[in-house]
Each structure stands twice: as structure tokens, then as C-alpha cells.
Amino acid sequence: MSKKRLNLTRRSFLTRTSLALAAPAIIPASALGRDGYVAPSERIILGGIGIGIRGTTVLNAMLPEPDVQFVAICDPNRSRREAVKQLVDEKYGNTDCALYRDIREFLAKRTDIDAVLIATGDRWHALASILAMRAGKDVFCEKPSAMTIAEGRAVVETAKRYSRIYQTGVQRLSEANFTFANELVRRGLLGEVKTVRAHISPWDTAQMSHEWLPAEPEPPQEEMDWDLWLGPCPWRPYNSAYTAGRWRGYYDFHTSCIGEWGAHTFAQCQDAIGAGTTAGIEYNYVPNDSGDGMVVRFANGTQMILQREGWRGTCGIRYEGTEGWVSVADGYERPDVSSPALLGDFRKIVAEYQERTQRPMNHGRDFFNCVKSRRQTVANPEVMHYSMSTVHAANIAMWLKRNVRYDPVKEEFLNDPEANRLRSRAMREPWII
Image (tube, rainbow, N blue to C red; front, side):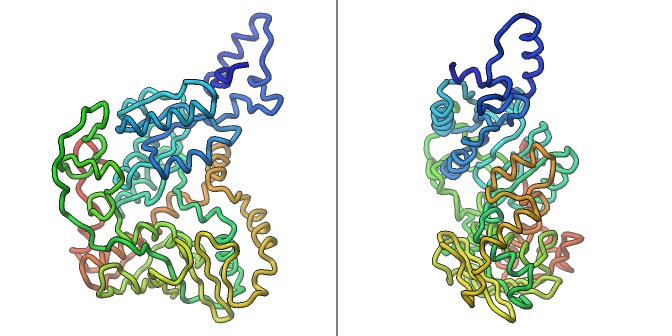
């Protein structure tokens, strides 16, 4: 049987099955969900928006899920969308993956799609998420999911208004090592934890560049739609370096060295200390170009220190309590701990977390489970928004070169009009939220 037979969608299944039952026929096992197949009515139809290197990694993790079927890719870069099509078609053994250049056409035409994977550059994350949710799609969006405090709030409100499921790609909230570290804090096994340390990336600066790269001849629109690629960012001449991924470090495209890894590590720290639905209230400026050493204070009295070094891998966190400490980053076989005894119940603690929360140690799977159950994801819109608000406030302190105070309830800086103006950025028409 050709794998093309698998391409029924949940929304077309009942119609096709009713027609098939009207006449004598042999119904394939794939249509009935037998012999290891997932019935069409239970499949999640997935599309992609802007899938490059990072997005391909995420997509490769999602494609083996038996109840997920990827059907279409949208990207203004022809080579990128064709690369995704090749990957998907090889997976399914057919040529069915559809190609779209313009996100508006994609969302308008593909009413069969249940959810989208968004892995564009940072500038598009919030806007693409909002457009997709308005079109009735659930969203898995790579980090950092908002360029500003205002964008983050708009994502939260859109998900709420349209009853959409949303997961931001801070996947360490679904990894055993990081979950174990967070559980040590939550269970009080480190004593009172008043200091946590969050890894920020050791390249680029907090200030970022406002310059433009030199103009190059613009390619044909079908090869690279430059206007669509820019999206809500201010216009500037085409330069191939931008589209090759070298947009980091530029203000219009990036959230700085603080946001690059802080999108992950701030979410971890805030989750562990019970500040997942709030943001830091005080940000102490440090006179360097990165924010290394900045102290962020939360209303519960905990301080988070931004730190560039101190781990053997990327996106590290460290929690320091009165009775011990734990530290972990990517690549650790097990977390570093102040006492080997803390690791004795590693598997038990992770298993009990999973039983209590019903969360898998698989970020994509958590998203798909929630698409079906309509339960909030582990990295839901509020988790994204408040951790990113801490990122943005830290950046603003660095840009203004002074301490700032922030009210997470009102979502405004205290007695600081200059800082408040930086809660949003101008968006280029027609890409306005």
C-alpha cells in the first residue's frame, strides 16, 4: 500500500469514510487505526513556518510521532522550503508536502492544518504565532517568542481569545536533568534558595548594532522574498548575510546575548522559584557590554544573577540554598550537586514529577498531548511572556545604563517614561499586531 494513502486529515476523515461505507469496499487498516496505524480522526495535521537549521532539528524530532502528519511548509526562502519538502517527502515516501511563500496565503488556504511549527528568526516569532492562532491553528514556536514586552502580552491575549494551545520552545522544561534541579528547589531539598544563576550567551553584546549591512542585488522574489523575510522589521537593503543566519547581534532582529540563552535559563529559574507567572522587579545595571553579573530581584526576595561562565555546557542554571546547591547545563550526564546523596533519588524524583504533572520528558510530545486534551502546555503563553519580560527588562537596563524597577502586574516601569517607551517597537506595515 502506498504511503500516500495515509494522507487523510482529521477534518476529511468522516466525510470520506461515510462515502466509502455507502458502497461495498475493503477499508484499509490505516483508515481504521488498526495494525499500528493512527486513525485519521486522531492525527494532528502539522504545517511549518520558516524552518531552517534549528527548525529542522525540531521537525526531525516531531516527524516520528505516529499521530502527527506534516503536510506543508511556508518560507520566503525557496531553498529552505524545498529542503523541508525533501525531508518530509522522504519520510512519507511521497511528494505531497506543499510549498508556500507567503504566510497569508498559507494560513488562508490550509484550513485542514491543526497546528504549526514556527522556527523563523526572532523578528517573526510573535507575529507569526498571532496570525496562526487567529487562523485557528495551535502553535509550537521557537524561542525567544517575543521581541518586546508588548509582543509577549499580545501572544498571551491572542491565545486566550482564540482558545489556542501554544508552546514556546524552551525545551529544557521537558528534560530530566533540568526538571530534577527544579524539583530539588520546589521540594526544599536545598534548604532556602535565595540565589539562582542564569547562563547568558558568551558572544554578542547587550547593546547590539543599529547599523545596516551593505546593499547587494536583491534576488528574484520567488527565490527570496526580501520584503516578506523582513516582515515587521524596519526596511533595509538586501544582504545575503542576513538570510544566511547572520542577523544576530543587530537590534532589529535579535534580543541580545541576554535573550539568546536567557529565553531558556530565565524560564528555568523562574519556574523553580515559583515565579513562572511574574517577572523580576529590580534590575541592577552592570557597567559592561553583556549584562554579566547583573542582579535581578523578584518580589519573593530571590535574586537571579546573570552569568556568562561557570558551566561546562550551554544554557546552564545553578540554584544555591542554605543546605546545598545544584548546577546543570546541556551535555551533563547528571547535574552537579553539593552532595552525592542528592542524586540518589534522581529517577524517583523525575518519575514523581511526571506522575504529578502528567508531563512527558519530551517537549514536542507535551505540545501534541495538549493539542488533543486542550490542556495548557508546560511552556504556555504566560510562562513565555513573563520569562521574556525579565529578558526585555534586563536589556532595557543595559540600554539605558542604569537600574530600573518594573511592575509585573501593570507591566510597566516605575516612574520611568524612557524605559516604558522601550516596552514596544515600531512595526512596519502591513505587519502590525
